[in-house]
Image (tube, rainbow, N blue to C red; front, side, top):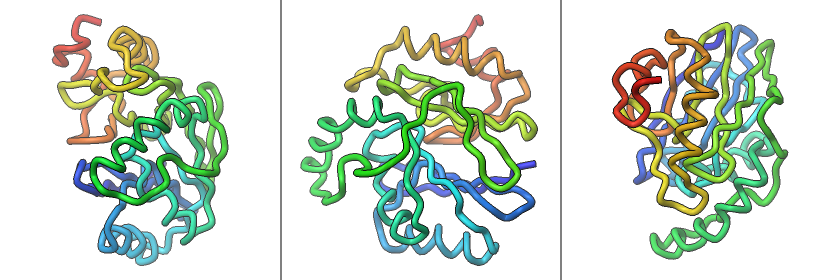
Length: 215
């Protein structure tokens, strides 16, 4: 079974997750750190719990979800895994945001391993199923651990909301399809760990989410 810890980082309040199993090997998902104290918070948690980072995953490449990738790479030597298609789509947009907010970071990871839906990512004795869930971004991914009934959804599905679709690569119909066809069938009791805001459950969103209710 997988355990997890959520951290809220950067001015955009991104949820960064650490997932680990009984081997104490862990996955870091959507590293949003931008300040020294945020890096310290994440690294101190990992070290105090004697965790060994094994994989670095990105649900999508919007700026707020990738700000800390380079720091994690330098600390642990991990190469980020994400959809290269999504990274290419986000490159121009991220550069614009970096200029707007006066930040000096790589707009998307300059290295990485290409992921696509239908594959799996392993750490310790655990395996995360990779789901193609575009719509908020051009080729977003979600990560599902069936045994623990946990889904890291990025900015696809939120508590009573969904990811915005007015950015480059966004499409409401595509996003709705991702939620209805990829996430809802996972089961009502699956816990959703979103990219922002609080955790929720698939069944609750099927019943109450005004954007995708009536599945």
